[in-house]
Length: 124
Image 1: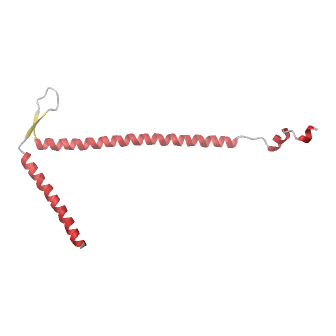
Image 2: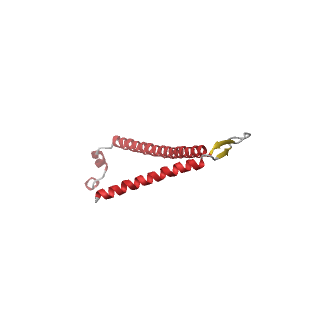
Image 3: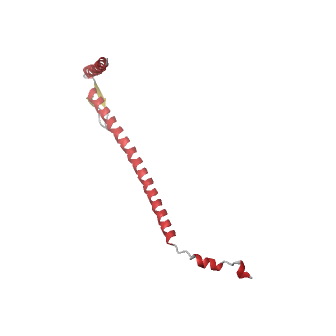
């Protein structure tokens, strides 16, 4: 039974791949004769280029643009995270320094404090 489902799965993938290849070949054959005028800069006449080249390069520019935008946002997030982490580490260091200074403070010995407290038998 598993063998049957595996064959169905494989042949479905082969049929989909064949359909995509047939569609691409038909697309190229139908659109290879078309040309498009493309304007690049001021005071220049539009260039005439094959439509398939134009479609390919516009698609390629979109992919590159998407990658650049995604990289930019990731970099901004990483810089923000780095700043937050550095701030947190600085605050932790400052807190550790304050605790170390507090531990170094000299306290008066307990006997000196007891001597200053008046006891009832000293009052009489």
